[in-house]
Length: 347
Ligand SMILES: Cc1cc2nc3c(=O)[nH]c(=O)nc-3n(C[C@H](O)[C@H](O)[C@H](O)COP(=O)(O)OP(=O)(O)OC[C@H]3O[C@@H](n4cnc5c(N)ncnc54)[C@H](O)[C@@H]3O)c2cc1C
Image 1 (cartoon, rainbow, N blue to C red):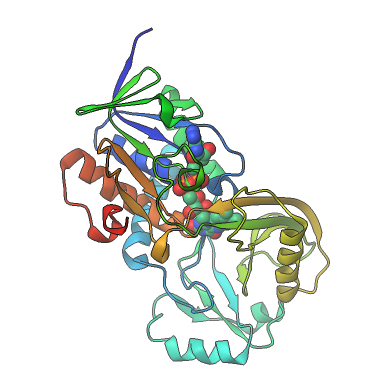
Image 2 (tube, rainbow, N blue to C red):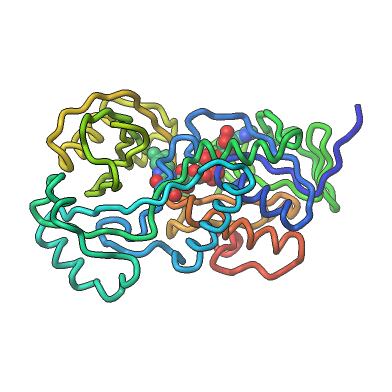
């Protein structure tokens, strides 16, 4: 059998592996991408939200001002080439859960300039909003499954279904060999499996990955022009249908749905609306979260030809494209790696 010779072999076609493959192709490198198609991978389950003012602390995401425009340009370029809508730009109505939160927001308003606007009374009146709220700008949601499919189409025969095992990997000074593929480097973009599975080359890396559960529900007659958030979120995804989430659970890395997860998401939903709902579906996945909740790239300390891109955390939609571009530039052109993104510094 003929051997495939490429520049880079990528393992994993989630948000990390997809952006990595596209960034390397953009640089003129050749790639093969392997994926075992875990149906509960974070990227397949994710809500794909871009929440520009996040969490209880109401902070901007790490490097948002730099990464968000790059991410938007990347998704829009793929929309143009595929003719498919991938990113749904949409206002997000953030409701305050208490007067304390409202005061906190008011004290931060200068730092959030350009990212927020006043909520109007009609919108607030549609939800449980006794403490008021504000509108987040420049947000929306990425249809992650549609995005992964567009990248798979671009890859064509360069995409292969395969369950990668490091025991079949051979290391040499000038590259690697893996099941008939010869490459300069292999880049592991396996999400949480890359951090937890025992035969993995990076299972020694510290992480605090978090499982998340999401419901898809039907709510009749509710206005769907905004995404809603209040210690949980509701994203309108089809007529009368919403995705609602999400839980955070740090001890279960399996990514199976549970009755507890379902009850917790229902509780979040009831905080936002009193309307009746019907559950259509429940999903779970595990977010790959590493120290500081920032992404990492780098090389294995003993096998320099084995590279790594992981730790996209809860923000893979915003940071994936920029980090991949930066890493691809380093791999292909030898540019210096940003020390804040390098794995070696944090081992
Ligand atoms: C419930 C939930 C909600 C989320 N909501 C959001 C959100 O609103 N916004 C946001 O930005 N982010 C969100 N995230 C986070 C986001 O999903 C992650 O940051 C991102 O998907 C991680 O991408 P990844 O490619 O690193 O990992 P993954 O998505 O896990 O992809 C890894 C890929 O590697 C493959 N793989 C693994 N091991 C092997 C192997 N041995 N051989 C071959 N293939 C392998 C898997 O099949 C998979 O396709 C959410 C995550 C969860 C779980």
